[in-house]
Amino acid sequence: MEQKIKQIDGNIGNNIRRIRLEKGIKQTTLVRMLQLQNVNITRESLVKIERGIQHISVSQLRGIRDCLETTYDKLLE
Image 1 (cartoon, rainbow, N blue to C red):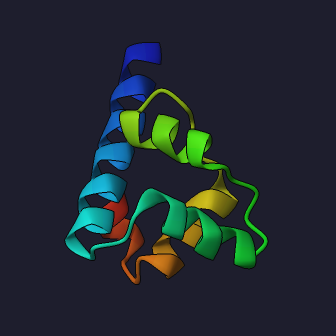
Image 2 (image 1 turned 135 degrees about the vertical axis):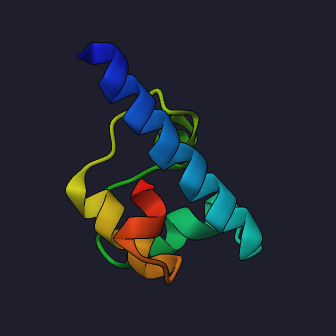
């Protein structure tokens, strides 16, 4: 079960990173955008989320979806 959760976290992180890079958005820029939406996140947290070593909260996922102008489906695939 724990291995499955780590795999899901890794997939979400990879998708966030891929979409962010496709849109030409730097990590620091995305973090600033999220903080302006009152999403509690630091650059260090984003790095860990993208690497799949930190769980993402629902509010962070929602904020990232909005900032990257994408869908939950694309983030969770």
